[in-house]
Length: 408
Image (cartoon, rainbow, N blue to C red; front, side, top):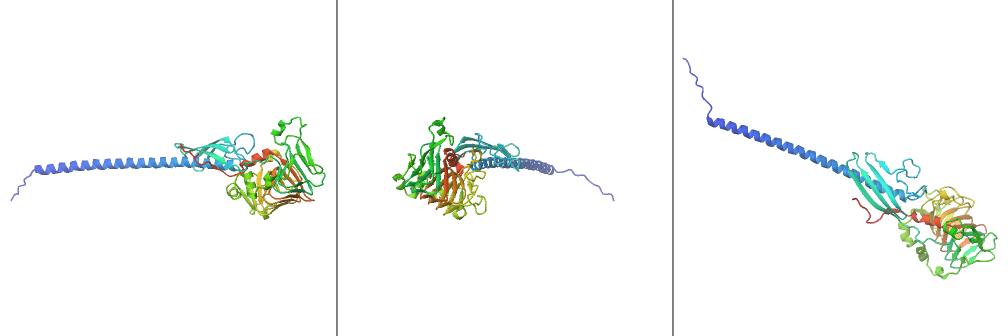
C-alpha cells in the first residue's frame, strides 16, 4: 500500500509571530547595545573625573607643601636672607648649605611647586604654584607669612637695671650710637678700678653725627669713670623703681611673661643646663644658640667659652665678626652668674640679679630687674648695637597671617 505525503504551508499567524519575535530581539539588542555604550561612556567619564580630581588634589597638595616650606624656611635662623646679600633667598636648599638656591622643587610623585617670596620683616607675601605629575592641573595658593615681633621695644641704651649697679671688678660700657650708657632705678657705683668706664659717641669723629646712624661705626670717647659720673649715666630714676618686674618685662617685650613664654619662645632651657651644652643636645643649653628666643627657667650659671648669637666661637673678650652674627634673645627667669669668658650677641634680659665673676662680653644690650654686681674677679664689656637688636626682632615663630590664605 502506498502512502501519500502532503506538504502543508505555514499558517499566516505563525509567520507573524516569528517576525514579531525577530523584531523584539533586534530592539532588545539595540537597547542592550545602547545601555552598554552609555555605561561605558559613564565609566570613562567617571574615570576622567576621578583622574582630574586626583590631579587637582595633587597640584593643591604640592602648592600647600610649598607654602609651608616657605614659611618654615623664613622662620629658621637667619630669616628670609640667610646669606645677607640684601635679597630674599629662594626657599629650596638643594645643595644643603643652609641657604636656599632654587624656587622650584619636584616631589617624589613627579608633581612640582614653584614658590616666590616678596616683602620684608615682619610680613612676607608668599605665592606657591603647584603642578600635577602630568602637568594638566595647576593650583595657586597665596598667604602672608607674618613673623611675630620678639622685641617690639628695642632698648636705646646698653645697660638698664631697675636696681643698683656695683662694679667691684671692672666694666666698660660703650654706646657708639648715642650719649647714654647706663639707666638705673637705684645707685650706680663704678668702683675704684681704673679700667671701669663708660664711652659715648665721639663728637670729634670726622663722621659725627651721621656715624651714629650706622651701628658700631662711630669712635667713642670716655664719659664716666671711677672718678666722675657723666651725664650718660642716669641713676635713681623712679620711673624704673616704681615698676613691678612684670611691668618692666612688658615695657621691653610688649607681653606678659606668661604670654611671651607661650607665644614667642623658640628654645626653653633649664637653668642648670644654661652652660656649655650645645643647643641641639638632648639636654639643650645656650652655647652656640643662634637666631633663637631663649627662655632659661631658674638660676643660671653660664661658664667659660659659651657663645650665643654667633655662628663661630668667640672668646677672650672678642667680638663676633659681622658676617657670623645671628643674634639671640636670652631671657633668664632667675639670677645669672657668669664664669669664664661667655659672649652674647643680642639682648640678655635677667628677671633676677646678675653676678659677673668672669669676663663677660655682650653686643646688643643687657637689662636686669635686680642688682648687677661685677665682682672683684669679674668684668663686663658691653657694646650697644641697634643692628644686632633689630635683627633679634624676627627670632620669634612665623606663621600665616590670619585671613591671608587664598587659593584663587
